[in-house]
Amino acid sequence: MQRFDVIVVGAGFAGMQMLVRLRQLGVSFLVIERGSDLGGTWYWNRYPGCRCDVPSLDYSVPWDPETEQEWDWSERYAAQPEILNYIQHLAERHDLRRDIRFDTVVSSVTWDEDCGLWVVRTDRGDTFEAQFVVSGAGALSEPNMPDISGIGNFKGELYHTGLWPKTPVELAGKRVAVLGTGSTGVQASTAIAKAAKHLTVLQRTAQYSLPCHTPPLTEADLAARRADYPEHREWQRNSVAGVAPRLPTPFAMRAFDDPKETRFENYERCWQAGTAALVGVYGDASTNAEVAEEIAEFVRNKIRGVVKDPVTAERLCPPPGTYVGARRIIIDTGYYEIFNQPNVTLADITGDPIVEITETGVKTRDNFYELDMLVVATGYDAVTGPLLAMNITGKNGARLKDVWAEGPRTNLGLMIAGFPNLFTITGPSSPGVLVNVMFAIDQHVDWICRCIDHMRKTGAPKIDTTEQAQNEWQAHAAETYAKALRMNDEKNWYLGTNIPGKPRAPLVYQGGLGFYRNICDEIAADGYRGFVFG
Ligand code: NA7
Image (tube, rainbow, N blue to C red):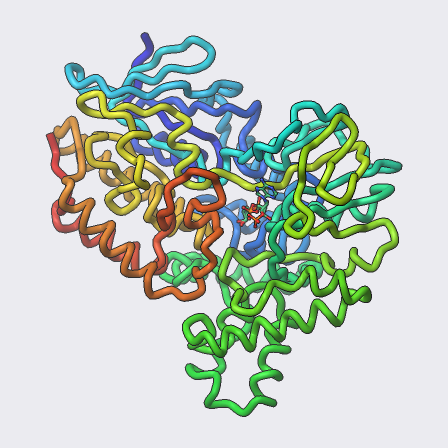
């Protein structure tokens, strides 16, 4: 049986940074990846229109200063092929592939108390031992396949966006339906509408989508960022979300201190700036329901202004009381415009629910949509899904899925009581995917590697969190969640409520990246307060 100091699961941005740092630490390690190459999210999500919702000049690795001086991002928000090229460039430049075992799925991770080691088994029949296991399995990597009657009978092409084929998918001349209208469904529909013979968008819940505006980056844009990358990285690390604001918002702390005319001018400026500026337009935009509703109605009027058919426009408008930013902001490149095309239909599957999927299409109560292709854009079992899929068993035979039956509990989103020497990059109750994940990863990798280094230097073989520290962290995380009105949509992958039967629990920490970093650093500096070394 092969033995390593550290086994890392996943070779997305988290696994890649961990790999680089572990080489520097001089420990023995292996990275296990289920894909045939690196990239994680950007490897799997090859669907048409896939694009990052963090600007390119903020979304790149902070551990390769040479590449950041050389890499030419082409537009404000990079599309998936460009990000995958960037990842492949990093892989070659740092010769990352030699430490990664590809096409391998971790099937179980079991703590051996007698040896004080993790035993990691894979679907290829390997058994490895390791002192530490680090999950870099990602937050949005466990696709949610909907349990719809007859879906297995469909004889056309069926794709989940998160498992999109590597070979080209021909859309021309085809009748396509997209199921789901989250970020993925909106991006995919916008692109598919341009190529397919006919597109039916199967919408269960209307969501707001904001224009991202993604002009080409100029030489001057790139040069300006290159000149200040070191300072910008430092700013990102200590900021709330690691993303440079498009506008210096909030314009004022209280919206209603401004007259109506000024408020609407400000909403318009944010709309034109694109992406999430609108959510931060005023200091109370996410905490005062009246302000939030005014902003929501502003966006509904934008939708009505674009979509010519009034019935379709109303269907696309989330109802009053649904706030912009109540779920993760969706950004688009002309989503509402597609509904003016003759080849696009919006199907409201709440008013006219799906009865079954047949061999040839989708049957709703009142309609039948004959299809050549069904694109399933129904999202992910987020944050906890990838961890639970590994079948982790900790001390005393405790299975993670039982321990988390009522919802995940962690200390700092980094460790789980009773699961020693197991670290979870962007784990539940850490900022993770709520912020620019590149910097959530950077901070976790740094904390974990410093902790491993500390243990090597002090000779401690084992670290675990106390239940008490874990309880305290959960209480603090719940408090920060309760303060954030904008997270009020009850059906939300941030809460786990997008998955039938999944316990409702806030999955991301709301206190901000910089604030969280300080807490983690302070705990480490205080002798890893709340953690015990064995
Ligand atoms: P999301 O945001 O979870 O959206 C999933 C969509 O799929 C949403 O519109 C759901 O409708 C719909 N859905 C899910 N299950 C079903 C079933 N059974 N029937 C019909 N419709 C369904 O996932 P995305 O992939 O779009 O985005 C996830 C994140 O990836 C995104 O926030 C970015 O951070 C990147 P519902 O709203 O539940 O009625």
